[in-house]
Length: 205
Length: 324
Ligand code: HEM
Image 1 (tube, rainbow over the protein chains, first blue to last red):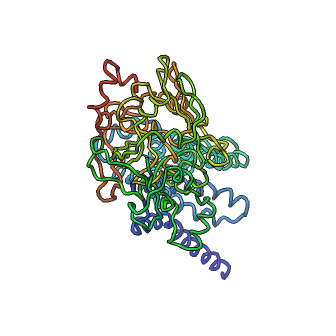
Image 2 (image 1 turned 90 degrees about the horizontal axis):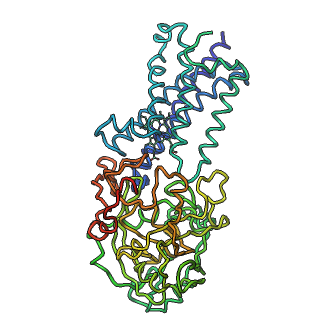
Image 3 (image 1 turned 45 degrees about the vertical axis):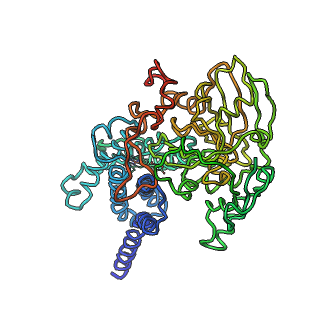
């Protein structure tokens, strides 16, 4: 009984800490804005930082399963939903900042469909919408056995985000190579542990 | 011609010294020392404050070539720009350009001209008087600034070098020195260094084409292309090549860096043109910096960045959506 309580405590505390930590990127942006440190082109700076935060949380989400495999502690899994929702949160803010601060709300169709790197980002986002929508306990129950395969959509989404990132490269792709390597290893670990088919979304085993 | 040189706390008119001193002046703090100092004395030094090291220039205003739009503040001009030799972030040039030494500086002149050779920068500039021109600068990334440049008309320098009748183009190169330019050391650089740019001869001889050695009345900060850079205000900013070490007169149209990298995105001409979209950025509007959060400072982009009166005739009969 005491051991169970202890476990729950650990989980509650780690969730709280994670929640606060996950708000830090947003907090830094807000304080930079308030302190006048955001620079002369706030739209660019804010959009870029929100996008990067979304991608970083996406990679963190994909670290959860390897962590469980390596440490054997299944508590990691209980943090995954929050991480995933923060990915969605930062992606939404990223797109809002893009529209409000960078390009404006005119002719949305053209905005989202004319540029390859935007199409990649928007496709990634579209793949994430059903994941966020089915993240609650109730929805998990409703979706039932389909939930797991559905949530494997995160893999193509992650690859699309990386492509979105890569296609913005100008003079240098060092950052893209680093993020790409991390993503590649995270996907490879799954193939190693569970087989290639685990990467295929919407497929039941 | 004389150059005024002053410590930053003295009024600009206080002291007059010959130009040779201007060219011997800058002992830049290295990036490392600068950042150590920043750590030691928070708030005292910012990377962009390297400009306080700079010396005032002697020039006359050229209102006939200047816009009266609101100027972008010096701090923004020096803290936010692209100079990919120092990194891809907008703040990287201000952070790392101090690692470049610009004194002494020489420019190699070669190709189809009567006066080729290696010129010490002061010799190249000696025959000319400086003027200040306040130009709009439009970046292909859809932001823009208004900057008071100090320098000399490019045409004057070209005449001095006496191109021959085979010279149809002028080609420029930026310094290539991985020891001083950290992004040139990157394994994953997509640009083939050195950075290259070029103009057609009649573009280069146009009255607007300008070689800048300063901004806001002082010698160029390194991050803005010290000690000498091109300014072609009717073209996207990347044409205005920085820290020039080579000028070559050619018969053939030279290959430029962005053209080499992504020919479908960047052409040789790169004239500002709201009618021709770039595959990554719509060019219809621009954010005039500094821009706000609550109200982004949008303005409509003008063809040739508003300099059509002076340059449109250069492109008569050309299909600008093909020659972008
Ligand atoms: C409709 C969807 C999207 C649009 C229109 C969009 C737009 C943009 C734009 C314009 C930039 C460049 C900002 C700049 O540097 O000027 C950018 C960068 C970025 N975006 Fe997106 N994006 C979308 C979706 C996403 C999603 C879903 C993610 C991740 C989950 C994401 C992650 C990133 C990343 C990592 C960057 C690069 C940041 C950097 O340069 O450091 N984007 N996005």
